[in-house]
Image (cartoon, rainbow, N blue to C red):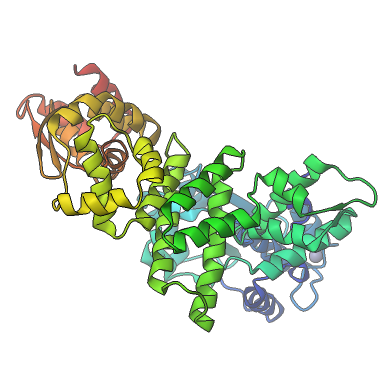
Length: 503
Ligand SMILES: [Zn+2]
């Protein structure tokens, strides 16, 4: 079955929802025959970059466009819509990172278009190209044949070399406003002859994060699950059930408790929500969305009985939890940690709660600490604060005991890295630096790489409650320099194989 996203993809400039100024400028360029040769479409996913790139390709090739808008009837309009127009070449840089694709592009680029007036190259996720590929592309952008148009689309413009960017006309795509997405969903519902209450549709909009594509796939999911029943209006409750959303009042309760620094209530509310089968990710999103509303109210009307600073802390910690949620095995944990951090008196208070626990009862884990916190707060925080002034860091024994766990935990983050850490032996802990002994220099290079440090800090923070740095000592300093050289070519596959051979 055709997805709603495909079915309702805009076909001409008039059908585009949002991105009004981009649409106006592009359409005017076509109408005035002032078309450039290279464009950069930059913005988040689901904001219509490739849809608009295709409409633009139609417009420049249309034989009877009106005021720059493609007619959708001529042979090139039709053939682009059906995806069989030979002069529209779409390259997905995410899967074609190599220089080969760009080299082939350079060979073909000089041939005149076969069907239309212009040959259009759309390179999606262009930031994924390798440096060599970028250099090859740059040569073409410097002297583009007059019949060629490049549209480079990206979600991460900052990763594109300045030399490329400076050759392009840049169009920025923004996340759509709620009202714009709502308008499109309403349009789709009308076409599909299905009925939603406004609140139900708005809930879908709020959960799409400004992306048309996401909103349409949620709509599709809801329709698929509820089915279309004549005269039945799909309502808020239906959407909530299907999305695994928490009820609004739970969201309000949690954020309210966090703003009052009521740890016990916050943890209880969250526990109830999490055990009720609600998607924790969605719940977090809803909570952040609600915080955002509060923030806007606070800034514009100075409303609310909490400080702006504390609200910002809530937002920062919840966003942090949202990021962690992507990696953790125990889905509740990041939010529980966030709650403890937010409701602790200050940063030291929480730090001590966590680290003093690991000293007092060596075996205590964070989840226990958190559940203890429900009954022991606020007394626990206050007393521990007086007793312990200095941060207690991890000792070598604790690291050694958890070492295999740390490595196992690393596998889903980065398989190669875990192979290198597996070869390392923990030797010493100096403050927050863990000294490791490794067999070869390339182990050191990989473990001490930014990625290696980041992953290790993340995992040690989670498992040992302390973000550790690592520093490596190489055992075989002079041995196998050749091996080192091969590896320094940075070939991950070679690295992994070698990593496993050297025991
Ligand atoms: Zn046409």
